[in-house]
Image 1: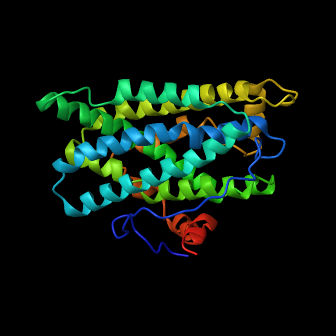
Image 2 (image 1 turned 90 degrees about the vertical axis):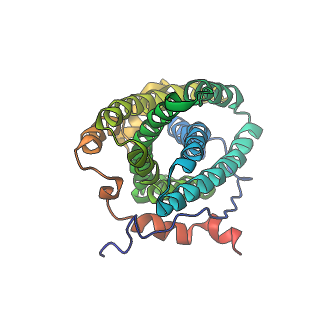
Length: 291
């Protein structure tokens, strides 16, 4: 079908959702320990970065006079707030099962605050630092949108028997990443738009996210209290899960760089968001909240 929506015409807003994680097991992708923990990174670690994005956009909002962009920014902040609460419920379930994620999440949160906070700057330095952060977050949002589309179109996780509540969580989150893929980019372009800054921070975002996924996934694997975590060392499990299409390929963080850095690129060029909006309309958690 032809694209029914455009980023410019679509209003972004937070949605009420109601997830039931009470029956979620430790390895909610059956027989796939490392793949489970890579997915855990998406909903345990990445929200810390999303919190920092929302903070940066909150700082940027008074500087944005374009009302349409202000509306999109407010919608983005509302969605990220809802993400944080939903992922916190999933985290509590995994902690009840014995996965001690607090030290890692707290450390990542501390690091993000120290590196990507506002640092109490004022005047021109404050604005320049805000633009640096927005450029970094715009690069990160490119990858979360690409991964979000991957989650919506990937049938391997469902075929593997992934627990439906966790599958709904990551697809709902992925769909909203696709939906608001242009917001941080547009805010950066509005306040600065410099290509050099955009390119530099995109490279940092690409390498940083790849390292975050590998290190955090390995850490969670090591913290997993299950006595039988598979025959293979976790990097081999990770490679196997990638080959089988159960986790995004690490090459994504390299192959997407040329597209993002192409002159004239805009996130809307990633394709229609029909898959995302269709899923958001039928998500079990969204339906449960509105029942």
